[in-house]
Length: 291
DNA sequence: AAAGCACCCTGTACGC
DNA sequence: TGCGTACAGGGTGCTT
Image (cartoon, rainbow, N blue to C red):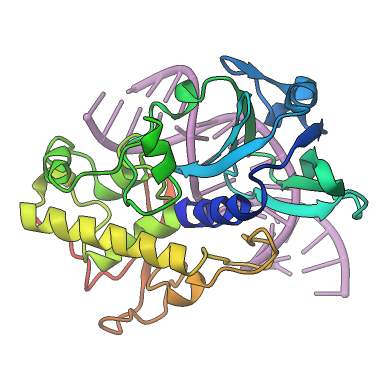
């Protein structure tokens, strides 16, 4: 379930170790995870095109990990179960490492993804992949360098209330919409809505300007807390950082996957409902639907 | 515009 | 303890 904070953690870790290093190639054992895209190499063509390229920097846009290489861009979406790790090239083979990047110094970057939803792209032009994404919720993250490249923009406070006014759908579906705001997933949306004391089905256009700004503040605070906690690790098989460490955000969750447990604000049990096809967690007492 | 659904996948949780 | 089944959800694409 990597969302913005988890991908941000990977981007920061990789930015410490990859710039300047040369890629030697790639092994792809599930070619569907390297699909054809405009200006890109897919499947087995990944390795030869990567060979000899150096890493310039590692960044993030929404939930995409974006790596600038000397000639191309390497873009990875981890989707549900994707993880990254750097290992010696003689480390035991990992049957779930469907895409492995070989590097200099006898090391590999492994993309491990049991559910195979994740995707890897090597493209000359990253724009078609990233263009539809909405604004970044926060400045001060690794996406800043993509802002400089014109590949990202940060949400401006003034535009937020008016953008909400134009949408009649429920808040949860809207915050999950990557073209509206980039990077939030199920965990951080539920936490944001609780922090703002707003119901997931609340129509966006009904928020007052003050409520809209409270929602913005809540969203930024939740994302910031998630980044500082280095992501959310909900189960042993779930998210780990590049070094295999768990994140710590699961210890700070107020409602997500806490069905039946007391709301941290009022003590009433947390409820679970399905919104936008996703398991959704609310405190019915704190998050009432406004008429 | 918005909502619902199938699809892609497999580990995990749960009921019996 | 073991087996079978439903569930989990990010994103895309299609339908209503």
